[in-house]
Length: 213
Length: 216
Image (cartoon, rainbow over all chains, first blue to last red; front, top):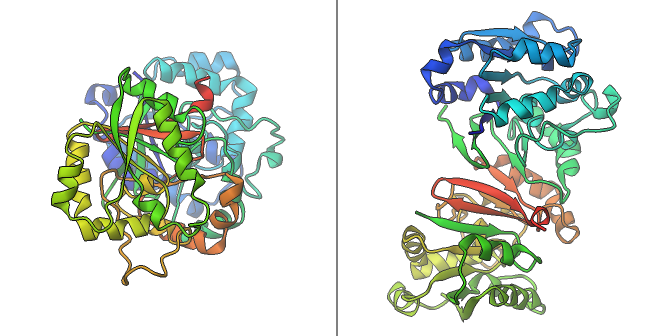
């Protein structure tokens, strides 16, 4: 059974998501993919959101290892991730993750694993890249061209694209100028997701869950 | 079990056929064709798309009869529609339709019908209105002649709001206008931008989006 939890902001909805994961899976280690925010060097103060996500994952009962796919070979990926039954894809920069994933076939690997039952949890860029194509979510500085991408296909784990952080004041200019016009195509469904909402996917069925804040 | 099929436009080739396949009926289904939303459409000079919706249903063994809730009360509606197999609601003006629902008590009929497990099928306004909140659509329909304060709540059957006809040339100026964006960005309901080739199948609290171009 395919199972995904695609969040907009994990530290807001993570408690609800983690409560749905069986304890026996939490006792085994999960893998926390950190690549999405490794596209540049951040000051510690800029990573507040990431530390909150880590805390929410930990408080949700998970024991986990960090993993960065950058510089790994296809064989490394298969070998290093074989033991994990739960993967968490951090937010950050979908174009950068896709650039790295195209070098080692990470997307194909994840697709196979998720179809075999590995649980995929994500936020923001990690939710964007789970869909069919990341292009609509790009903006200057996080655009496919900035990373030399000519193919913007995502991992294709779901048949819709999530537009995360919908309604947030600090994201509004990018949505108005870039993301909504870029999404205005007859290609896929787009789900505009507030920070307190996530999509729970079971095989090809899903529901949008709203968390009280 | 509730079962809904929410389309942008059932006129599009393949949508009606796909829904028919999922219901799996091989006999005629008596279908109430609720055309009330079309009565509120801003362009009353060209309602050829209503004929298109009806034709696609009929072509797929949904045998329709036209019906409006305007001017009716709930007792009459319940009596008139007591033996239907399918409830279909057209496109048009979702706010006008909600006003007519309020006047007639039609919301209760829809809720009871959907809870009975019989299929609810809709296009555009008929798909928007099953959500909780229609405020994201305020720039797309003419509300100037409707009672104020305007009722922007939907029927509350599903927990998302559909933005229909996404990506189509016909609605591009409306959807990409600053006013539309502002209404959409203020919405607290999850919004699903749905193009003309897709529809949402809802079973109870779960749903999936089907693109009929992938079914050929």
